[in-house]
Amino acid sequence: MKYKHVAFILAIASVSVPTLNTMAYAEENKPQPSSEAAAPSAETADEGNELKMFRFYLRTDRLNFVKKAMGLNPEQENKFLTQYDRYDIELNKLNDERVAIIKDYAANFEKITDKEADKLVKRSLDFRKQRTALLEKYYGKIAKATSKVIAARFLQVESVLQGASDVSIGSSIPLMEK
Image (cartoon, rainbow, N blue to C red; front, side, top):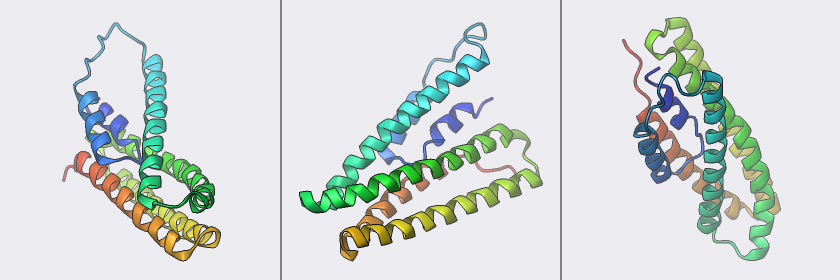
């Protein structure tokens, strides 16, 4: 399928724009295996492992960015990171749904029906609602553990990261045919 690699790259939910662009370029220019190469199941397993490694790298990169952007003293950072680690675990689980939505879109792109389009849109809107609810939940937890100013700063940093991710992913997904 022509959009298979797009789905792989776009399946990463929490990314920095420069990293995603670098990976997208590398994936697009990666030599294609011959038809005699690996079986589809081995290819799928390899893609799954690549995705896990890529997501782990991006989460580490993201954590470093968040820590630097937050600019907290060691005591504040320790309290903040206790909550942030929990947030990140929940966000990662939620991002698995985004991965599934993008994969479903890529799998059906060339033959999408009104019914399938409607399902994908509803799933995407539900993902966004859940992501907002998660931010609200952790705003309260971080505010309680640290301060409301630190919690507000967390929301600002997450807003930048999520916005960059949404733009990068959204601008890379081909539009549905009319």
